[in-house]
Length: 172
Image (cartoon, rainbow, N blue to C red; front, top):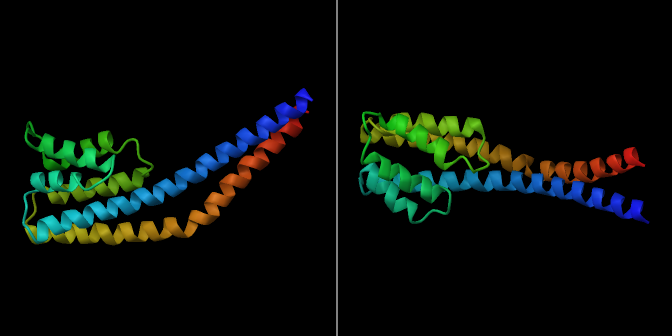
């Protein structure tokens, strides 16, 4: 009876790990969409109201959920005292600090960092063009992530349960 209870607990916990991994995949897709929303807002602030970046970040931070709101707020605060750093360096630092807890991949953070290189010093039209290019790249990543979402979720859940069953067989 005790072995049966232990086996059941192993299978349930391994299934839970699989479900946790599938939730992470879904969260990744959601965070990509939030990043897209944030950049559309930034584009609008720059294009239509011609708001300086610092003020635009603060305005957008109020409308975004965590961790993106905190990322934008801290970036705006750090812009007040650059201490000899370029905006691109500040942007990359804030990406590493502020978006560390997200499910965004390293490639996503690197491409976002490249966007920051062009935001800080180019003229208005070039900044808008850089944002448009990034949004196009982001749209492709979102589409790819969405296409693989269902398959990956099922895979992780199945592997979790199958791994639990395999472990039980090994232990018995």
